[in-house]
Length: 591
Image 1 (cartoon, rainbow, N blue to C red):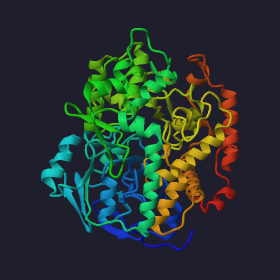
Image 2 (cartoon, rainbow, N blue to C red):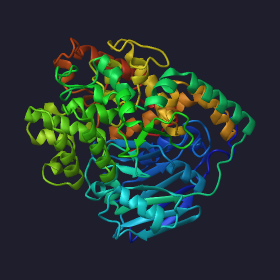
Image 3 (tube, one colour):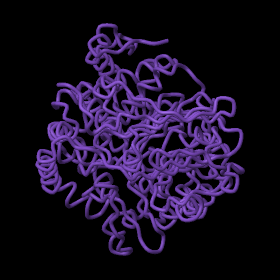
Image 4 (cartoon, rainbow, N blue to C red):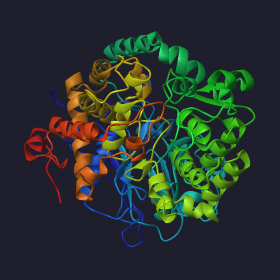
């Protein structure tokens, strides 16, 4: 890379300590080498969390790092996302979550690459940011309100920043529910991992951001050229132009059910009972009956979100799959209502659905539509059995004396793909730094959608290498911060080119992959420091012992693949990064 410039990055980070004794608001300029090496977003958050040292997840010293990327706030296709990093109260791992909408672009236009929040306010507060003006304001009248009421008040009445972006928690975050999310502009979620509980533990109700500035671009002519090239690739990709753009993410329901990887009855089968009708959950049925309108995040030509006049936001694939067939609920309307409640209370739909799958298995019967809605509300309010369910699938299953019914990795419940039929994706679940997650490597792309090229989903052969490559790739993507769906059409080369045009720093696709590997290793070091090891890089026994559709994962082969994966990463036999690898990546090990 050549010399750094002032483009793309704002080179300013806002730091807020909410503690009464230490309360302060200041700003600092990050070193350019930090931005070059970690890009922004997830990478910047991971480095800051690792450098901050050990801390309890709900302790005041835990950091919330909202970080944009160097492309955020430009009109780069699908670059309107923003990353949040913290220590998870659900898993105990390092955790990042990224969110669409307009919060990230608003941050950049206000002049910040990142906002770091630490400490705990003695009373409920919200943060209001408008360019250089940063204020803490009382949230006493908002405490106890759910997301939509809070967002509406702050956008229209409370702050005067009517065209600002709001990220807030609902009652679940206030009550420190370990499944709590942070919701941006009422429908976009920093989901999974209990990040909303961390915000609630700080007595922080919301952040309102309004920016009037612009993100400078180094070479506008080249930027325009590269933007057109990316848009052409997105249009040329049928998965995007004929799938996601037309139907949204629920177009996957029919594909995964056809492949027998849509989980049913808490991952005990992949074939529904004869009287269970999947058609109400198919994207074409939803399109026909509801005629939903498309909704796009900032600067996104894909527009995969769907909403209608009656219910507003409609659920995405993971929610549809897990709140439908996996809990044996036949009613799509109940899924819509449960999804709406999750967004309003501020709880993660995948995690709620995961623990309800466990609950349904323990009762040996499916969850009715009314139960789904009522149990979701109970989780959000931390009432009755909802308090136990809200602690997460590992805690709930253990409390019932049936830990084997918890379908999770590192405490994070699995998404809506059965790993026995997509074995590389299953291996990526096991080795994910944040727990059971499909987005860390997104092997959905090659194993299910056949993008950028098809790989055999039914074998573990070669999957150590595929997993490493895709993990490094999407660590960089999450740091730019760009939507993963764009990479179904474009790739590292196209985004390296447009990153170079924006920043004036010469990036290659190899530079992005190296940055991704660096970020992955920092996250691994964080987890190793927290006590995670090889024994945690494993799937639930169910997938090794119980066949579905004639398929099972061979445990001996899985463990051999894990050893191969460690060798390819330059880690020792226990999965600890070796000194030589850290030296090559310019990472200093910290206690």
